[in-house]
Amino acid sequence: MKVLGIESSCDETAAAVVEDGKRLLSNVVATSMDLHAQYGGVVPEIAARSHIESIIPVIKQALSDAQCTWDDIDAIAVTYGAGLGGSLLIGVLAARTLAIRYKKPLYAINHVEGHVYANFLTQTSLPDYVLPAQAPAFPCLALIVSGGHSQLVLFRDHFDYTLLGQTQDDAIGEAFDKVAKILGLPYPGGPSVGKKATEGDAHAFQLPKARMQAKYDFSFSGLKTAVLRLAQEQVGKDYSLPSMELPGLLNEAQKANIAASFQRVAVETVVDKAMQAFEEFQPASVVIAGGVAASPELRRQLAERLPIAIAYTDRKLCTDNGAMIATLGCYHAMLGRPTVDPYKLDIAPNLSM
Image (cartoon, rainbow, N blue to C red):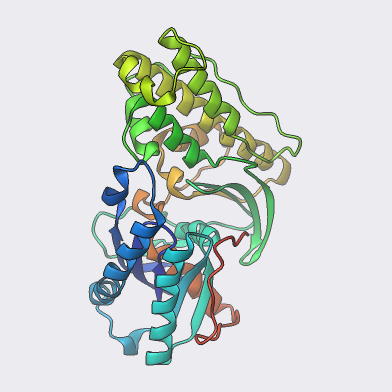
């Protein structure tokens, strides 16, 4: 069973071929991140135009790298939500057209659920990929952390899961991006804050953790505001100082200490919840998924606190990619999940788990 996966929910145009839900045959990603960096975040119009330019070359390259023709492909899987409407539309229209042209079954994939399935890839002949030795066992606790999502999900089996909690405001990745702006660090914020944090003292400042009514929900807006107020205090100003002026007033040591303290508390926030859920539900395995899953600090804290071993997928499979979509598509096909009509599939920008 070979599935072509297509992903275009944000600023990456991606395609991949996966075999039997476990073997990665190709993974091609074209990013427009450099175009967005000057604006400090993704510009939807620019992202959509970039997808139009990249989608066909990326798909062709994925097939070529996998040494496949269309005769070898058993099905197509595509992200139809959640994400930016214009970006999703390009991937979905491409997948619909190809499914009709080559008479292939088409599977509609939830982007957030797809991130979890990157952890089910255990084999590849591609260079520079380090994958887990075995797929996660059920029941599985998934911590999904990215620029748009912060969720705790308990998977009892494939397609049988419960959403335990989620962010009630900013996602953790969004908070990293906003703190990076406060400190004058480049976009995307996760890697740049993480890099700056290595120069600082993670316990230089005490920052607050939100207390939520629902025990597995998250909130990062208060932490983000606390960082802003801390930065203003460090330069001897009050709340009236515009945040855009802070990078020029903070010295490098202050930036490093704020970055390190923020990263520690942000990561502790999600790890605390994950540990609480682990103790309550006693899952057989734990996985992390989404762009923030590439964070060395998150991986370190989880490995130190979990009483069971945790296997991390390759960092290249944490950010948006076609491999995770193709993998979930394989399980849709292998477990007999329904296909969608390629003449009718629509996007769902606000899709949730």
